[in-house]
Structures are given as structure tokens and as C-alpha cells.
Length: 403
Image (cartoon, rainbow, N blue to C red; front, side, top):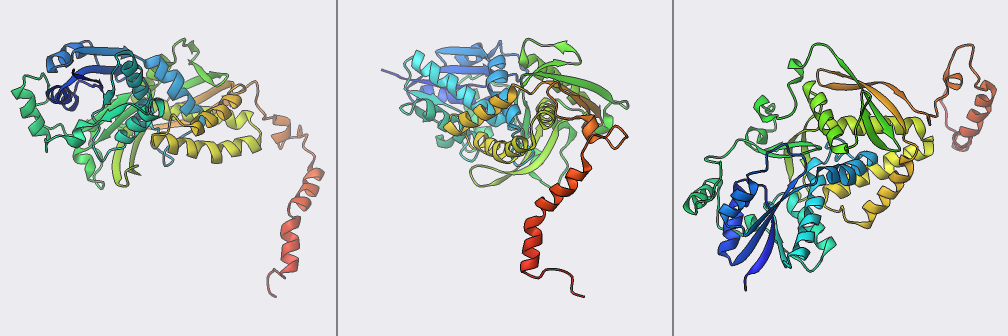
């Protein structure tokens, strides 16, 4: 009896070769392709997968689930890995893993497989996610185990077995795209001194070639959910994110170029495009800063955003810690209502206005005009009490300027 495996399948060279390679090893392969907003036509995927040897090929549109259950919680957390990366690739892996496990149960498969390499982060994300959901499933990673030493060898194998792949030579860059943006690596980008070539970018224009006139956009939030852009209401969150990528990308907004610390212990030059991700995280934070008291807002910045970024990057989405952090941000979300206005211009997304019915900004307390209602005498007493520990310490230790 053949062993059955559910393979995360993109339709590219690696996963197409994996289908046949696993078949040759005695597996019955069912492929799973997730539409998470990569902007590709997926109609040909089933035919390609079956031509490579798959017994069944599943294509699944999960854009809205990805937007609601993954992008939205991450936006609320304010997570940016190493204070820059919007975690777009890391964010899709647990959802795809969840679908692989569900299909393994449905088709009585004891194995799932992915196309990640041995030095990438994704191998960890796929495998930890699968095991968190079903510790009895075995995860296969053929790229770590097979005999091929180069992409050219894979192409020859594909030709030999009649596997339909478009690749004829190594592409200069490797791409991973979803609703939250595009991850770009390899090729010329491996020279960390070299500026990324323009042909590497997919959804953002060169800022110097962006429109010469700024564009103003307004993003509206209701109970922690972005619901409108420039007054246009959206029932589907994925479509709002998609449109924001187009708007921001047109102005060169969302480019990230960094040398990041990979989970496996190496440093890697990564280039990303994430217009919607950066804009939404920034907009959400702006409303939070307006509606939250100082203690809650500062706690969120120091104890939620960074831990959330680390656990998503490190493949720990299906952990109790992530659930607990989501509970915190979900509680806050009930009062995150309002509108943020951006000025998009030549690669920048500048916040130029904000308002909220729950806002804690009161002009008569903040103003220096005659309408000022702040009790300045209270400020004097507050300062005396606040500074008292420092004053006492200085006296006890004879601090001061020697005369």
C-alpha cells in the first residue's frame, strides 16, 4: 500500500520536481496550493501538478481567512521583526500548515511535505506549526534530502520525466508574495553593498519615478478593523489590503532593505515590499496612541509588539503566548475607532491627520492659548513629588557641581 502525502505546492521548479521525486519513492502525492493573494493565475496548477505525478491537486482561495485571522492580528500587535520587517512570509506559513494538517486528516495521510531548504526559516515554521496541530504527522522536506546539488540538475530531472516547468535557467531572484507584500532574495541581492536593482521589485515603483504630486489617503477603523479607504467601505478585508498595496506601491512606499538575523543562526540580506503592511501598522498605532492611556500604550509598545514579532518569525504562531497576546490586543481593539490621514509622496507615508470619537486629546488641556484649562500650579506640585527621589538621593550622596 502506498504512503500518502499532502504537499504544499507552488507550481514552481522545486515543488514540481518534489511531486515526481516523492512518487518515485513510493508516495501517493496530493498537492495543496493556497491562494493567499500572490497575484498569480492558479487555473493551470492542477494540470501541472497531475502532469508531474500528483493523484489529486487542490487549489484553495484563503485570502480572506489570511487577512482576517493572520494579517489583522499582526497589524494590531504592531509587530515588526527587528523593527523593520512586516513578517509577510512568516505570516502565511502557519495558515498553510493548518490546511495541510486538515487535508491530512481528510485524506488519511500520515505525511505532509514542503519545499523549504535546510538553511531557511520556513522549514522551522512549517514543521513546528504542523506538529503543534498534530504531533503524530511526519513532515517531509525533500530539498534537504535529495540528490540534486543545483537548480540545473533539477531542470534536467524535470525534462527527463516530462515535468512541465517554465524554468530553463536560474532566475536572478527568489520571490515569495502574498497579501502582506513581497519577499525578494538571492541573485545580486546577496552583495550587501550593492543597491537593489530596480528589476528586483514587483509592486513598488522607484520613489524618484513616483508621481510628482503627493496623494492624500484616509484609512478608517471600526473596533480595530480597517473598514474604509478614502470613504470607500470594504466588506472583504483582503481587498482593502490589496488596494492599499496598489496605492502605496504607486508612490514607492513600502520598500525594506535589511540584513536580518535568520532563525537558523545566519545573517541574510532580505529585500521586501510591503506598502499595505507598513501603512496599516503605522495607522493602527496612530489611533492607539490617541485612544489609549499612557500606561496601556507604553505597555503595548514594550511587551506586545516585540515578543509578537519574534514568535511569528520563529514559527511559534500556534503557541499559547500568541493567543495570550492576541487577547490583549483584542481587548484594546474595541476602542480603536477613527480615521488616519496620510500624505504619500516619493517613497514616504507621512501621517498628517488623525481623529477618533474615543480620542483622549483635549485641545483645551493641550493649548497654550487663552483657552488653556490646565492647572499650572498643580504642575509645580507634581514636579516636586516626581523629582523627590532624585533630590533625596543627591542630598544623601552629596551630588552637585563642585564650586
